[in-house]
Image (cartoon, rainbow, N blue to C red; front, side):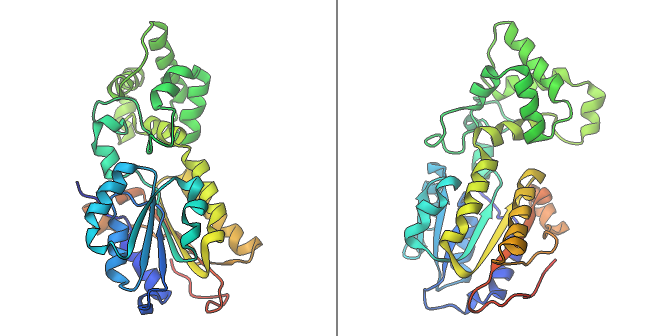
Length: 314
């Protein structure tokens, strides 16, 4: 199983510009707040040979795979189990961190294992929990338990699905026939049957993509978890720490953008280094299709060595 980190090169460049490459005395601590399959952590361990990397993930399977992948760096790498809402608590004893990095996307492991229920291209149980140990409600629970009005609102709010009401009614009609939805394939079939063929042809993407995004975000409380994580960063960040966040849709990006703006304008904690978000170039998108919707925003706290009005990028 492979995973190519998105926008890794500019993240490393920002870290180098912050002087992290000069830190060879093992004082630098990096928090990889979304470990996944360990792509970011591996690069940080290779590039910053004096750094200690502490990584967090809610998925125990991802932690197991990453530990095996990074076994050669065991003395400088530690993986921890937890979600965003426990960020401050999980990393507190290892703080302060000079850099905190987030990749808010779904990992390839979750997308390519049909039994996890994330993929609309493979049939599997309607699960979608990133960390089953930390989340009881599945996508099936939501689909079969919510009213048509509630489903329509969910699909619109978290997936920005234009046909949310029609899809919700289609699900309701299916349930009225005494049939609960249990698999991703069943949900995809309903969506395809509800949406007119000309509409599907004009979408330019899989007709179920937005509904699956909405369910995944809701089941894992991704937006709430992100807001909680952002609120706790200052507690574990070094005085001149850098925060880099890669988001993949407008809902996440809006939360990050507003948080960074508040930190800069209202709290006077530091400066946003990305006046506009950094986007992947054509080469990266061709190499890694997942990167096509990614946006990178970077913030730097003011510290003893970081004066206001520093360099901006983007």
